[in-house]
Each structure stands twice: as C-alpha cells, then as structure tokens.
Amino acid sequence: MQESNPYCVGKGLLHTLQPAPRREDQSDPSTLPPAGALRVNLQGERVRKMGGTMNNARRAKLEAIRTQLETISNELEEILSDEQDAFDNMPEGLQSSEKGEKAENAIGEIENAISTLADVVGNLEEAGA
Image 1 (cartoon, helix red, strand yellow):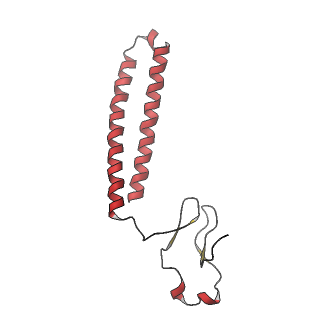
Image 2 (cartoon, rainbow, N blue to C red):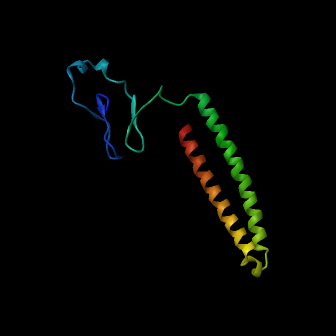
C-alpha cells in the first residue's frame, strides 16, 4: 500500500513529481516536505533523501575504492598487453590450436573485465559527484 504523501510519482522515466490533491490537514505549507526531500531514481520510483548529499567520509571511501579499481584495471591492461604479445608471437599453426584458442579466450575475458571495471569506476564517480 502506497503511503500518503503530498507528492506522487508514477512508475516510469517520463513521470515527474506532481502535487497530489490537497487534504484539509495539509493546507498549511509548513506540513509539506522541504524542497529536495524527494527525488526520482532511474526507474521512476520515489526515493527519500537522507540528509541531502553524500557526506565526506562516504565520499572518501568511494574515492579510495575507485582508485583501487583503477589500479587493478591498469594491472589488467599490462597483463592483457603481455598476453596479446604472446599470442601475436605464436606461430600461426599454434594460434589456431587449442592453446591459441585458450589464449584468445583469455584475452577476450580480460578485455571484458577491463571494460566492466571502467563502467564501475564511472558509476562510482557519478555517485561521489
């Protein structure tokens, strides 16, 4: 059951916060939520803010995690480069063998991991902004 609130949000990205019909007990503007007390998440659902913006301690933790993930991504890029060089230096017959296929699969999976980490780092940057 949806709680009674002077602001309503429908499901979906196209809906925005809209005033609900006033009830007699809400005729006093001081009973309305303060500006910015509600926001809409990407799914279009109403979400209460807890104290507005992220505090500095949580932002610092996110930054530390983001830095660690960037370090890991850089290390993966080095491994990827080494693995790609090793594959490129294999004779053609070996590249098309089971060993070569395994090396190609490893290269692809490392590339996927690097891409995923880049997405995570971007999300953390947005969260800390």
